[in-house]
Length: 339
Image 1 (cartoon, rainbow, N blue to C red):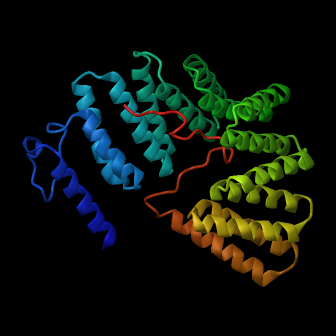
Image 2 (cartoon, rainbow, N blue to C red):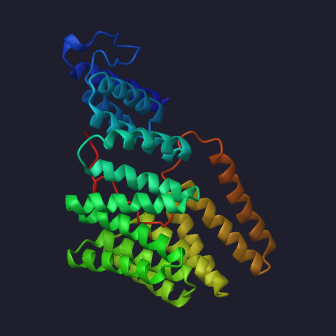
Image 3 (cartoon, rainbow, N blue to C red):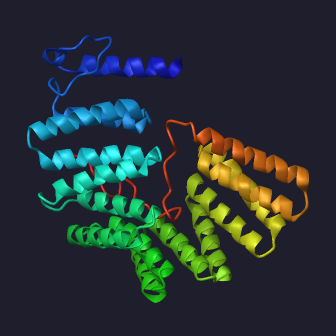
């Protein structure tokens, strides 16, 4: 009831602040069409809904914006909106649909000058291609994105792609090259006092060590990340790190330590809320209880995990994905992609 009221209130405010001549639709009922608002105005309204996870409404305005930009032959504007649509699809778990939108956007970007959002689209498509197992294609997208970010001197966004690229190289047996790439990001981020990317690099180092079966080194990097978070708290990052450390504790036969870490991760994921992270934490907790022959506790933890996974399968508004590594995706504030 409250959500419906807020959406109605928001739509009323939008009508009131627009010039009267633009209000050719009934105040109560239909949304504005691409014939009454410019593409930029439609995008701005879509962004309001997008920020509140009102995905159907956001998609409605974004799709109208695409039509408006297409009619006006504004290729860059159309491409930018397609990346926004792809972002919603990716958050909903519709990765193949997201990839289709991104490919359409990249066709348009190929006919315009390079921009940060062009690189954003390459990076996003690379992440999806990596998720579906197209590793060579992902590596190519990452390379193209890095090239554009370098030319634009966008160091934070470049660093984010380099972390993903480095991890991919480590997992594809080019470990020295991949580790060097990750180390470059860490050194550059620390030099410019970018705590967020320094932390992301530490996590990537831990992930790389884990892939290479260097468990003690991975733990050291994750713990260094937690120490950095003590100075600048961030619940989602802390939850991810504790989940990683819990899994490594289990790999070393330290189930009691893993239980404490997994429980803390659950509390953090519940506070966000982040259903995927919480479900993964419950599943890991169940494995620890099972290893300790605590059957009742293991059964309850597994029940909770399965309940969340089943709920997610019918949830319309899926939570935001975290990507192959828990912290390395660039944020919108670091690579602006607004028209």
